[in-house]
Image (cartoon, rainbow, N blue to C red; front, side, top):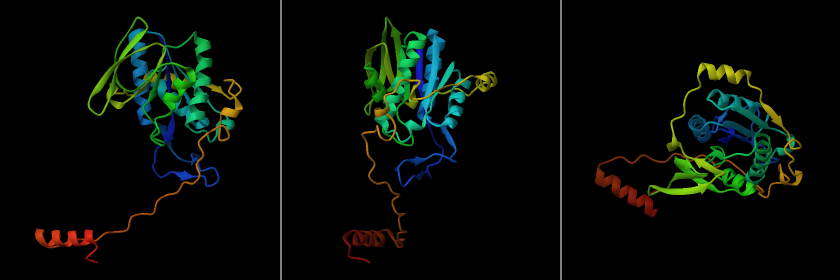
Length: 264
């Protein structure tokens, strides 16, 4: 079984800076980590390989520093890592990002004779759109199941999974190849072993540009993104309120008056 895991490196802090000209995140100089939801996708990929055999490949799109995220995934048990990096990708929205990743997956698929499962975290902590995973499946024209909390069975080229809902979960079946976005309920990620960390340190990471993955330059980067950010800003901090003191009845009367605008 050939498994591809898509991950993203995100800022570790919520105090992000915005480029006023491009309205995009400034990532230089900001400590980054693997998107927390993607760690569960990495773990599930390793578990599937341990159960069914085959090969796992982790891919990410980003600057050179994103290579550290790939090595961390390898230290957890992933076999190979691919970094998709090119200045032409800068400013990509979720549509352009999913297109770029799909081009890389097509190249990986050709090299290893096809793939069976693509795993993604349910969403990224810096964007919270949950659009890239479904976008990849659309570009590749394969089935998708989002918010997967358990892969029950894979048999006869068919996967049966539990999809998390607000009321509980649905049981769905999908033919392979298929893309799953996973939630944190799916597993408990392992810690990297010493052997895994040594292997990750020595691993050769493939670096691919837009030309390497045969990406259409009209569909990548800021110019190839159909989403336009008109304005982005930080909302003003809340002003301090006032403390209401007194017995319960007195405080209740003051609060009702404030709500009605009768008390200053």
